Image (cartoon, rainbow, N blue to C red):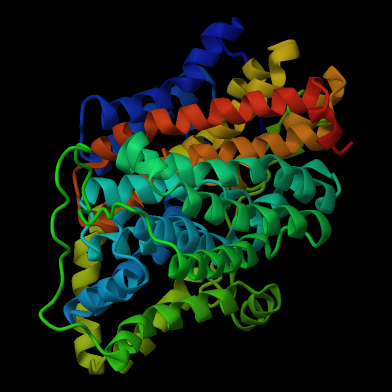
Length: 550
């Protein structure tokens, strides 16, 4: 049994700097040194092991097993999702259906800004709510590439759009996990998080389009942006407050998509942006890319059918009752011997010493990636592929994403070493010492947690208990500060290495992960700071304090 130590150097500042070193090295290797993602990830793993063992005193055997545990989780379920989404994308692309898909979107609007809003914000929110764990970025980035967006913008804009829905992703998984570690009321956590994110659900569409088209381009479609944001935010507020976290994103996304599509049948901007890449406002718009013949209804249905199948199956796979049934058929659990319950997380991070479990659940039937694979196989057969051809294309997909899978496995290893060695808690305790400014730093702690682990769920598990304990010590609402961890975490989703690799894989833009990180980093930090300021107002300033749930 090994107890975590949170100040191994006897100086809180030096210990915090040491704990942050793996994240600094990883992000620096990607964004500054421009190393290939899999190499940067391996450097991050090495740095994490050195810091954990030599500075924090973690036994080498425990560190090695934590690394292996992280690698396993990176490959399954996360890598499993990516592999199968890219498989479906390749199948549709080989059949030339993305050209038809482009036509179907341009039938609603030929304006690239509005296409981006429909796909990245509305459709992406649906996939986040139904599946999460990288699915929305993988799907929307692939669709944007098919619509003619350059790889950098398809990747970066998909990441920026995938923010406001994240806290309720995968049918509310992040908040369910947060409730499990804090012991707070789930409906109160859901309602509080909904109140925090509703404002940003209106802001994000404007932010997204301003990044793509600039201020002038954003102002040109402000009515559509307002319609999209408000039609998403109102259901988000109501469902999170009166029903719970499970269906918030799914219903809000469907409402927003339907309302925006109807609105666009009645309104179109005065100036149509037909170019998919960012250009100066004075540049004349390029002619729309069209095929020789517009597809008929049958062709449009055939192009959308694989994605309709994907949507339906991913949603069905996410229903708790279905997951439970599939797990009952086959979900072997593997206890990580030599790691499970052999590490104690210590006060003040928790109220009393608590052993850290290490159990790998191979829920291969209920995993979202399995639902995607079934959708891809059915879609492939519908598109006319023979079984042998599907097998060949699947092997080509594995070859295509091999480095991405290696990267994700290594990234998750960094996250797991960080967790089991207590590096995350050391950084969290540093944030907790900020006194009256804690609401801002608590939000940034959630942001940092997602940036490091790649998951709002993981960040809530890591820091949720700490947020409640610190809130009670400072006389703040535990529900407010626990939800701040999740709401702040959503802004870190766009810079976590896992999401960036998913985006680069979906757009086939390998080796440019550092470019994507630089593209989104300031937007991620800016939105996180705004969220922190908003939660600060909720904590101390009337009338914002009226929104707080005790």
